[in-house]
Image 1: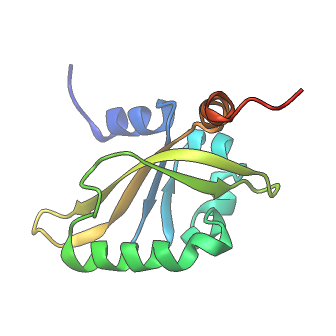
Image 2: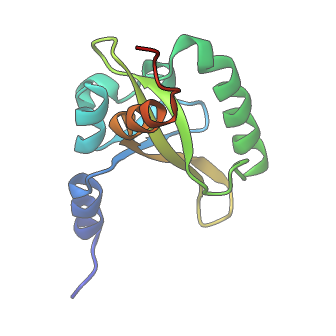
Length: 138
């Protein structure tokens, strides 16, 4: 099969996990259909917006500290390991998402931005917490 930019485009759009690419300033440059389903924003609404669009306000300071370090050093703290975090949908609903992050570099090794892959794990987290909760007194 002949690989082409079109193949890469099909893969990005048809994957079931949300894919978000942000430039070094934290502005959304790529937003696939799964990201739209997960967060409730269409690509037209998300593209060009700051990542604060989906980061709950109380988590923003920590996010930007980590993001800034990653853009400066070219490495993420988690080195590709999944991270459980909170996110916010367009309608204000909070959800748990499992995310992996990677710094994207150009051919010369310069930082082009960051990609995040995310999936909704709210149901799993709620079940785990319910199973771990002490039994209620009857």
